[in-house]
Length: 174
Figure 1 (cartoon, helix red, strand yellow):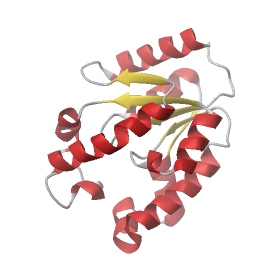
Figure 2 (cartoon, one colour; figure 1 turned 90 degrees about the vertical axis):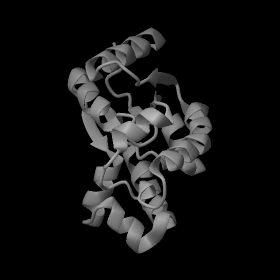
Figure 3 (spheres, helix red, strand yellow; figure 1 turned 135 degrees about the horizontal axis):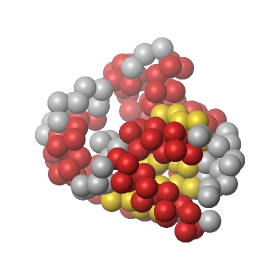
Figure 4 (cartoon, helix red, strand yellow; figure 1 turned 180 degrees about the vertical axis):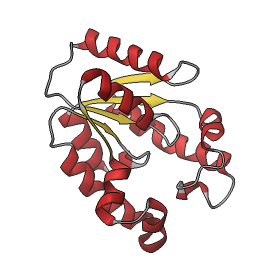
């Protein structure tokens, strides 16, 4: 099916389902799953919003790049990345060179519905969340597409349907 030591990196905006899909995918492939945001929180000993508050987005992105650099060097890993991880060229390069990149795509309106009231999303705290998501989408969608080996629409299907679609695409590509 999928080579044993290959990595699968999930990218997409917040609320696209990277962590949820990643966990199910890892179970089905008997692989290790890591969420880069959770790994960063563990390393720093504080939640993402606290890092943003103390160091700003630039400080957070620097820490995120260190985690991505380390994790992408592992083998047999399913990695859910933070939505903004593609902003830095070094992250895009590490992801595209060290594994199969899957863009979980959803439109900004769907993402807004999924993230409404969501704590821990510092970029949505200052202003109109719907407008912020539309702006993030406009900026990041081309970057996601630039490095994606596969694009999966996350609109209506259940998580299991999404994972099965992804597995079929990965199998066809191998």
